[in-house]
Length: 461
Image 1 (cartoon, helix red, strand yellow):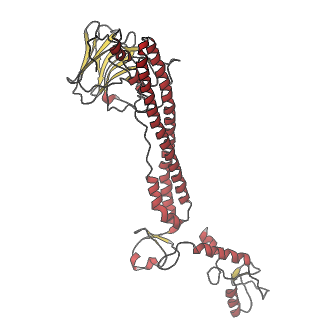
Image 2 (spheres, helix red, strand yellow):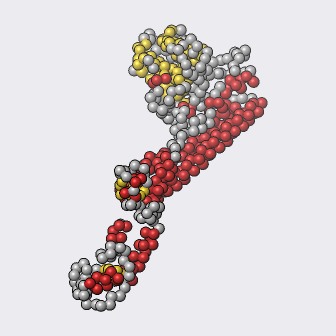
């Protein structure tokens, strides 16, 4: 549009911007001096363009056209000019990326170099910058999504806190009055963790809000650059690209949720060490933060089943610890040494998996590479591992309980029926990673970790 306006404002005789323009009756315009000079050599007073004779000897100035010319000249004067030749920068040197005028193209410093018109160079680079905005806009969408997740997480922390407090209170109702001090101590610890993790989440949300503002500012700034004139755009192009590339994807906060297992896990056993009365102890505490949304974990964190219940709190928002593909849950504590035994009451459950999962396994999507398991489905048992896609396990009678024995140091994972002392299957492998107890079921019949009755002399760290 700029070049078209310039052409409309040029005198046909001198090819320059009109000076004191006059308009003939045929609607053609000329500089007053140019027209008088032409008529001095052609007394017929013809229009230099269409040859139509003019009947007027005195032609008044076209002030509207003169005003347009003056505005155009003022605007052009504000455009950057070549520092060497004081001419309009019309070309971009493709070899060194410099903006040059027509005279620069013939200079020794640019001899044999390739050039492209400014408007074409700006058009191509605008497309590049516009394309680079797309991932940035996707990042902004992701930041909004992560912030929404963090907002939900912050709310769920409160839900978890309330639920945990209720369950702690239910446990303490069964104990004697002198346990008030123990109860208060656990409440303080829970409140401190809530405050600490809520503060972390608040800071994360604030940080994401700032990221959203920064990303929005960057997008607005970049879009403004895209609307700038070609020369100004090209001068700011590198800075605009750098601003776009400096943005980074946000990450979910690991360990953001309340560590429910720490507050509820082995609660009775910990209290028993003070009371010396009858209590039970579970060798495995399930981590509800890792449970698939379709699983219902029991209040004491030792049982699990597939299904829904009105008493079960809504599943928390997505978090790094949560398993999202297999309908499963892991224990709250992993093992990287020693020998560990736990028993699972399977009862009449006809679809379950027992085993161990490596700590380094990604819990999103397929988790086969770090899983050793015994699976019962369709009335058959199979043993599966990272190196074995399925081995049939012969069982004379379906057990009601299954004992899992992990000998980490010896590199053995065994399954047996404790009621009949019958061996079922053993994996042998040199373990190098921390292993977490793993339970999966897609049945409404619950699976439950069998509680142990510790002796008074049992030393539990």
